[in-house]
Length: 342
Ligand code: PHE
Image (cartoon, rainbow, N blue to C red):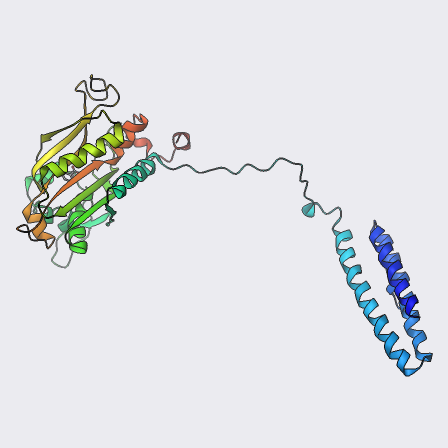
């Protein structure tokens, strides 16, 4: 009897392995597992045996039945899935190409600058794009009605504070984050703040209402103008190549004293003069200067103890120069034909 059970199981499994279609499967079920199937017959036969044998063989038959049933269910699942399209994977077909995104050229240049400055020991700061009039102007030595406000066409926000003043602007420069950084970190400090700025420009190929700058501040004891100059020289050589020279010309910015315009040898013509540098051989890239004592004070820093410098790169301008982009409006156009080139 024992052998018979084993034999039935073996036969069943052998045949199960050879099954090809659902009809064979049904036939097999009928033959072995149904109420009139071979296994049931054996189980019926058990009733005439001794109690001991009944127990032993009953257990054996039951185990065999469970095993056969499990294997059968598995086989049925496989056979039923044949011919169903969804489950069929043709591994020989070529894969579906996944489209890669592109980093905006502004992001590429920003990443470059962040790598460069963090390698020089700077941290990276951030500040709000919707800014208070105070941080964007007043604290930077540009009080209300001061003519220096005319240097930047500003988007004022149409909402008054409780004193009835319009005190919110879209920040016109990343310099708006200077005081925030001083207040947050104190001295000494080395930080850059890349970010988006806004001005009420009539747009054309060279002007855009939304653009990027990268601000930098260094505060410490005995920080002086040569520190600023040597830093800007290092940055110029890293950005435009080892032969790049820097020249600094006086320029008024209310929050620095003295204020300067940093210009680098035009890397397109190597200083010979071309259309891009307007035949001068120099590219105007960065505003800079020693931070005005009033600004340090507004940031809670004692100008008798600490000094510092600040600089602001036109990040959008850098990207235009680096990639030869001749229309600033392309950056915000969302035009994939433009973006996919980077
Ligand atoms: N914020 C100035 C601008 O937008 C640039 C600047 C930054 C100048 C820091 C001096 C120091 O024109």
